[in-house]
Image: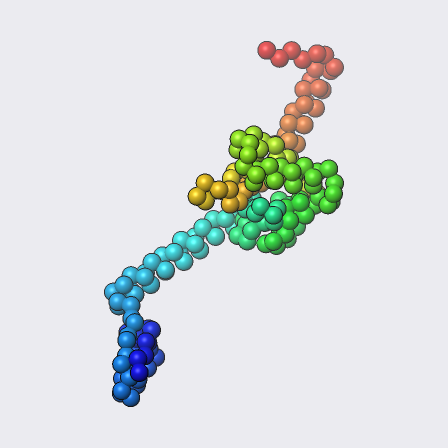
Length: 193
């Protein structure tokens, strides 16, 4: 009889290999090199630490970041600020149109879905299709700007990275500036050079 035992460099694997050999079996021991195993464990710990650090950063930035798949659904891993910017609790797998509170079949939902479809079709120049995405949404008492970038793997679009920015305050500032200019000029024409 031949027995192949994996993980035979320690623990249950080693004990099993010894027991089978003791019963007369020809044992093939598959084991990782201990130095390789220690190196692998160090790398795994480093990856976990870096992943944790990236998650901390993403959960504390003011901008919203999320990935959209070809089917128009968002992936897991979006930044925490997306919930605040979109005034909703996002869930991985949720459609992007529902994230923005757009009514299915509405003109705004259609425009967003069409824009996403054109990007994933990857027929027209990328800059052109990204510029076709709606770039401004009014959500509750906020104005949220949307900017997209493609994420490619082996030359094929895998997802769209969307960056969300709260532009409410700058727009309020512009409105106040316009009102201020209007009051200062008392309905006189403004000449801008």
